[in-house]
Length: 514
Image 1 (cartoon, rainbow, N blue to C red):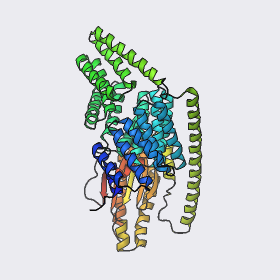
Image 2: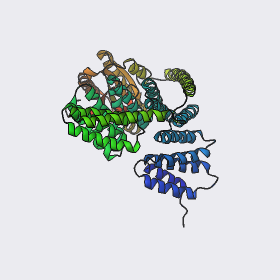
Image 3: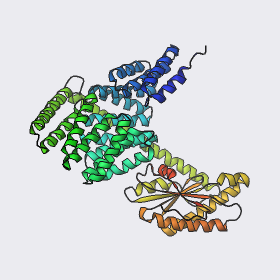
Image 4: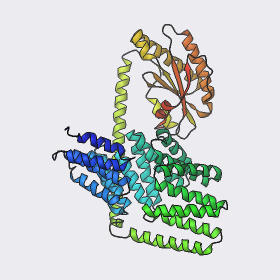
C-alpha cells in the first residue's frame, strides 16, 4: 500500500481551511500520522493548519493550543514562527485575552520586520489596531491600520492589500471621514470578487451602506446593507451579519418601522452572544433601547438600557482582569516598541529608495549606450501618479498586442522599430494633450489624463493610432486600449490592466463608450 504524502495532505488541508474546516481537520490529522519525527517544520505546518481550522470554527481554545504546539517546533524558522504567532494572537482575541493577543501580535510584527515579510507585518499591524479598537482608542487604531495598509501595499499581495484597505476604510467611516474611505473600498473591490471572498466583499458593502446612511441616502444605504447581509449570512460571517442588522434596525426605526427594527436587533443580539465579548453587545442594546422607546414600549426600553449597563460594566470589568489588558507601563513599553519598528520601517524605505535610484541611474546609463526604443521615460510614472494623488485622474493603457508575433515572424529589429514608432507617436500626442506618457512594460504604454477628459482624449488617441497604423511600413500593428479611474496610485497600474477592453485597432467597429 502506498504511503500517503504528508506535504500533499497539508496542501489540500490548507485549501479547505476557508470552506470546509471539518475536512481540513481530517486531512491534517492524517498528514500528522505520516510525518517523520525529525520533520519539525512539516509537523509545525500541520499544527498551524489545524489552528486555522479551529479558528474558522470559532473553537478558539483548541486553535490556541494547536498554535502553541506549532510554535514549540519552529525555533529556527522565522517565517512559519511569525505565522504561528499571528494565529495565537487571533485565537486569544477570540477568547477575550487581549493582553496575550497584543504580545503575540507584537512578536509577530517584530519577526516579520526582521525577516522582511511585509504581508505578515501588515496583518500584525491590523491585529494591533483591532486591540486599540476594542479598548476604544480610535486614534491609535487608525494609526495602526494606516501602517498595516502601507505594509500591505509593499507586500504586493492582492488579498492582504484588500483586507487592510477594508479595515482602514472601516476606521475612516466610523470617524465620518468617508472621503478617504471610499477610494480604499474601491481598491479592495478591484482586488477581490464576491465569489472567492464573500465575507470581505460583504464588509465593503456594509461600509458603503454605512457611508450612505451617514450622508442621508437611506434608500442606497438599505440596498447596500441588505446585499451585504445576504452575503454575510451565506458565508457564515457573524460580525458583518450583526453590524448589518444593527444599521438596518436604525433605518427601520427612523422610518417608523419599529417592529422590523426590534426584530432585527433581537436577531443581532442573539448572534452576538455566540462570539462577542461585550464590545458589540453594548451598542446593540442602546439601539434596542431607542427603538423600544420610539414605539412606546417603555418597559422594554428600560430593560434594554439595563442590559446595556450590565454589559458595559461586565465588559469594562473584563478588560481589567489579569491577562486581559496590559498594565499602563506594559502598554507604554509596547507603544515604544511600535515607534522603534516604525523608525526601522522608514529607514528601510529610505534604503530601498536609494537602491532604486542607484539602479535606475545604472539602467539609464546602459540605455544611453544603445538606441532607445522610445523617447518616453519610464521612471517618472509612479512619481506622476503620486503627485496627482487626490485629483480626479484616469489611466489609458496602450498595448502592442502582436509584438512577439512580429519579432518572431520578421525580426526583433522590426519589432523594435514598430514599438519605437508607437512610442514616438504617443510622446508627440501626450505633449499636444498636455498629459503624462510613460512606457509601462515591454509592449505597453500608459497615458495619465484628467478623469473628465478621458473620453475626449481616448477618441483623439484612436484617430491618431489608426493614422499611425495606416502609414506603417511592413507588418501591421494590433493595438489594444484600456482605461480606468485612479483610486489609489499604488494599485492604479494593476487596476488598468484588469480593466475591460475599450477598443482594438485596427477595427471597423465604432469606439465603445467608456
